[in-house]
Each structure stands twice: as structure tokens, then as C-alpha cells.
Length: 440
Ligand code: DC
Image 1 (tube, protein in one colour):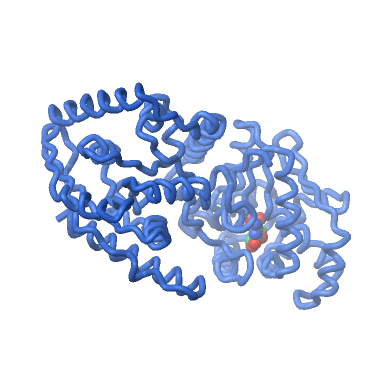
Image 2 (cartoon, rainbow, N blue to C red; image 1 turned 60 degrees about the horizontal axis):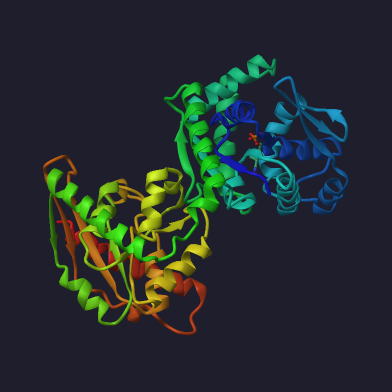
């Protein structure tokens, strides 16, 4: 599998144009999946096949041949060998394509074709379900958005340039209907993946959007290349122990010079440790809070950190020194999970920011269930931590540890996945309520 950039978004969000520019700039093969659904629709129109005639639809799918060819920066779409690039953007197809793309058989066939396209090449693929269904584990996941009126304006302009006859009102109405259909269909609905980066282009120029996404892609490419380095585990030698002590002392001194750090409730860590390993859950305000938790603790604290932080050499060195567990946020990272569970089993303290991002509480970020899942699975307690302060130089910031929370009440045997998830949600809520109280 090559390097995969997945871009989703509603019609007219600019993803088509941006995808073509990025493909050229970053040497990726662009795939417009909307054009594929449009080809199936055109063939159905030509063969006079109605939406509910599934047998006929299947026949079409069996013999259809779609080619997406780049020629001098233009996308040439061929349907069974014929250039249909213009015809698939005209009104008859526009009106029907959303309904065609809701047919399960059509989706299964096209999703399969799309996955095959990524087997041998680096791609940038745009559509509606690329980040959620086609490639939920894509290297980069972007959701592009813009206000409905702005999107209709852009599409109208595009149509004029391509000499496609229409009025602005028609385009707006068509887009409104399509939004509604695309968002509510049973299969392959347009959704925002939890871990997609949202780029709202309403008030951004095309150049700004391209720059922003190009930077994300370049960083991710760099991270991927460095993965063998990032995932290295530094053996626990005598020198590593000494080095860690020196670095802890040095960073503590820096903190004391530049901030007034107040740590309270430390006895709660000792209480939790009576049972063995435990999990520390804190709110995340600033990069500095994770380091402060580690360097102001007598115990060894093993943090879980975004794996792309390891792209920066000094952070990579620190992560290796303090055995930080790198985690890929855009997928179920089983490797990281295993290392976390082993850390707890070994009787150590594992530290996690359940918000998964800085200032998650302020941003109303969706809190992740990972900490609750591991605490319930391993039966270990959770020590909530509240971080508060402005992180401005020479001001005070507080690290407040709360009473350990017993998670055993959430461990119920013989329940189904839905109930299990409900219990994890409740456990996460209990943890985060305690964290929030400690920030006050
Ligand atoms: O991006 P577009 O407007 O050319 O897409 C045409 C239609 O196909 C649109 O109504 C949504 C649908 N589509 C889809 O359901 N899944 C995709 N991956 C791409 C497009």
C-alpha cells in the first residue's frame, strides 16, 4: 500500500481543484471518486435503467470500464473507452448521481475499485466516504468544508468556464438537495471522521488552502519515513538512568526559574500504586504540562504521545529517554495499546491526555475512551489530574492530583459491544468530571 491522502467534503467545497493542485505539487496520483459515481449514473441514463432495477444495475457494474487519465493537468474521464469528461458534469447526471451513489451494490463495487487503485501507487483521493469507509487508516485525513452559498457560487463559476448551461439558482438548489442526500444516505454517507483535520475554506483563498494541506501532507510524509526511528525502544542501561536523572533535574530547574509550579495531592499517586500499575489522566493545556508532570514526579511516569511528535529530533530523543509510547491518532493503534497495557501490568504509572489534543476542554473536543478502556481492561485505578494556569512566563501553574478512581465497577462480564461502549463512555465521563473539578 502506498502513501494515502484522503479528502472528503460536500459538493463545491473546493476539494476537486485543491486535490489536483496538491497532486501535481506533491507528486501524488489524484483520484476523483465522484467522477466514478458519475460514470455509473451516465451509463444508467444511457441504458434507461431505473434506480430500483438492481439486477440491471449489477449488469452495468459488471461490464463497466472507468478510466481516470491526467492529460496536461486536465482530468479525462473515459467510460468504456469514450471521453465523457463533459457529459458527466451536465444536468441529467447532476440530478441523478446522488441517488445512484446511495445504491449499496454501486458503492461496494466502486469502493473495491478505489482500494485497488491505492495498492501500487501514492494517491490523493477525494470523495464523500474516503476518510471513513474507503481508507479509514489513510496517512492523512482531511475534511474540506465551506458555506452552502459560497460553494454554489464556486460551482456556478466552474460550470460557466466549462460552458455548462445553468443558472446560479439551479446550482444552489441542486447543491442543497445533494447535501441533504449525501449526508443522509444509508451507505457511504458524508460524515466527518473523528480524526479528520477540518479545513473550512469559506474565508480562505485557494492558495491558503493548498498551503495548509500541503504542509500537513509533507509533515506526515516525513513522519512516515522516520517511523522506524520513532518506534525504537532505548534499552534501559545504567547511562540511560543517569541521563534521565540529569535531564529531570535540569528541566525542573528551568521550570523553577521561569514558572511558579505548584504540585499538590501527590499522595494520591502513592495510594493508587498500592495496587500496582495505574493510569494518570490529565487535561492538556500546553506542551509544557506533560513534561512538568514527568519531571516533578519522583515515580517513573510513562506518557502516551502523538507519534508525529517524534518527527522533531530533540523531542524524539526525550521520548526515547522517558520511554514515551508513540500512538497513531488516526487509527486503532493496537501496538501502542499493547505497550500501554504492559506498562500497567509492570506496575508503572501510565499517563494519558484523554482529550487527545491541547485545550480540548475549551475546544469541546471529543474525549477519547482509550484511558477508560485500558483501566477497565486491566482493572487498575485512575488518578485524575487538573492542570491550570496561563503558561505565561513567571506566572504560576498548578498540577493537582485527585483521589484515585476505582474502575472495577465498569467491568461487567458477558455484555455486548454496545453496552461495553456505554460503560466506557460513563467511565470516561467520571474521569473527565474529576479532572475538570481539579482545574478549578
Ligand atoms: O464530488 P461530485 O460532486 O462529483 O460527486 C458526485 C456525487 O457522487 C455526489 O452526489 C456524491 C457522490 N459521491 C459519493 O457518494 N461518494 C464518493 N466517494 C464520491 C462521490
